[in-house]
Picture 1 (tube, rainbow, N blue to C red):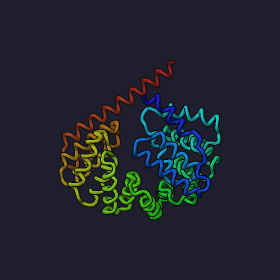
Picture 2: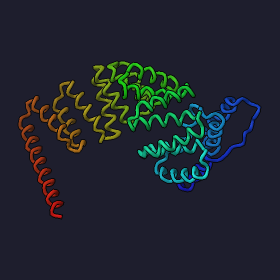
Picture 3: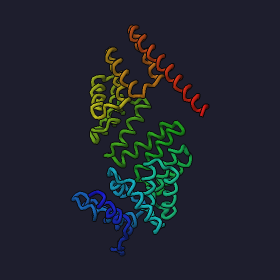
Picture 4: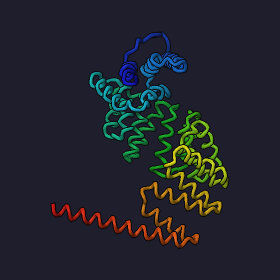
Length: 350
């Protein structure tokens, strides 16, 4: 059924519109189109809703939310490759469709095809310079490529075009922290983003983590509790909340949320490590060791984590376990070096 519906959905997204209500102001027309889209979406009439959102953007390209609604169509599992193929065919015929180029850039970015994503987003901005959402997406791609100053310029331009675009403020806050270590400015922009979009769990998670990094633990807990209430099945949010509670000295709450994270995803290594730290803070050293061991196993037997684990076990008097882990580590290293030597010899002979 999904394969049948996808071309139809893309066709709706890429279709034209009739410029009705010509006597109305542009923003008023856009507002009416968007409100119609929201009403249709809530009633499950997705075909008509997509048409309304697209009409919104064609009237008012810097609309702060309509692109978010359109992107929801592309979050369906297993449709990315076919969606990209359809969009590529469309922009080959209609190269001036900024909406299609922007969506294509997002999909390229999700597949880490950074150069193609940048080119698609450049086409989008060239076709419609007021497309603030395209500039934001470009900023995030530039961050991935560590082109920080270009990313800052892209986010700042988006904010000038659309001051109400939460993602633009979050992007600028993120790059200021990552590139310049400016936590105060980063916090200011994230607070603005959350004020503009208070029901966004991702933004609240980022705000909480930034507060955590700034050692503002009560604020971190407050933001992450709100994020968890909105997205209770996200192991990252539960882990961050556990870490914030740990630093705030509320160890029982920390354990509760870290265990929730592991119940959602038992392979979430960061949650295991954080649980070990929390047990350690409570003096439960045997439980801490078990959590650390499991974290080590799930980190592909990282040798540095193993050495740290050995030192930790030794500091708590478990000498025999230390000896056993040390022996296993030496055997693993010798085996790895022998295997590499054999491969090198075989390559030389070949």
